Length: 422
Image 1 (cartoon, helix red, strand yellow):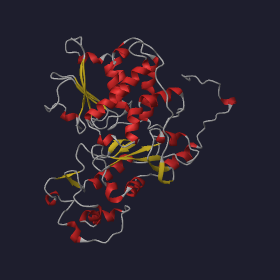
Image 2: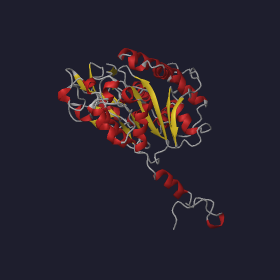
Image 3: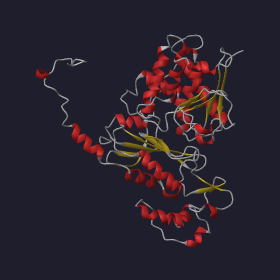
Image 4: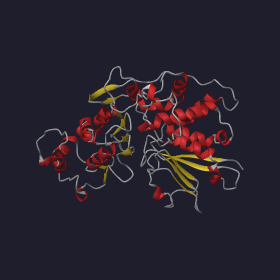
């Protein structure tokens, strides 16, 4: 016998953890990095096992390890024994969807090279690589590191196949085989980094960070950008020469996906920033729920939607909306708010498994379809919804922090305080 490690890529598969035993998925299935929309969970009951590793939903993002780091700890704790049906050979089915990115590909690799972590001593460069990914992912790139350090430029080279596909807009037109080929290339580069299989270290190349971006709009502590390189958000958070007041939020209009929707992310600079991103996601879902798509095309054109009942209903919400006169003849009897009046075959954009969502420090648009709000209203609507949920507490907290006694006079305190004062 030999280990059976299968990577299953179904681009449209997104489930809730409550669905993992509904008969569609074989046991030994492991969902990685958002293919199951709920937090990390395990099921070792008879008929299993099943696992889900995720840090994108229902968690405190700044203190929850990324998927790859969770997998590393899972392996080091020797919990893979649950996935050895004959108590010897490993059997896992690693499930991915369209959200497959650097973290998911690294997690997949760790399962394939699990023995490197089951050993008493893990290769230092692999442990360092996972830790770098962990810090970048869970802090949205806002923690302080040098993007031009050699170890980081090696990481950019490892992930270059994904970075290139994302920036060129290829991801949304790629099929499952394309995703698998991309992941295999990343895995080969990880082997090169580690000098596997012949332990010849030093084969990894380096490339400089991609920090390019275009500014769409900016305001008090926030910025909206497009055409962003993989390191652009982190660069903006850490290096404020061009934007010295940027201390709250970066919004990236990432790309247009294959179904015409836009992929968007919004990330805080720090967890303490008073910006209710999850509240904004709820409102964006409410607005998005008014749009339905027959055969992946909008029921109404943008001009028609702007004159529909749904649009006029939203005009009282205080959001930015184009000022256009109502022309009822353009609605053609369609109502986006009443499913009974949708044309045959029409389906809502928003479903239980295709939502705006995320965690306390970062949110994103529906990953399967993208958002169609930009199709009808432009990026300005996203901006104004987000600005509604920007709170004043951040500035007040800063004023309070200025008066805290961080600087204690030498005469009143020893050089090193006791850990256990009397």
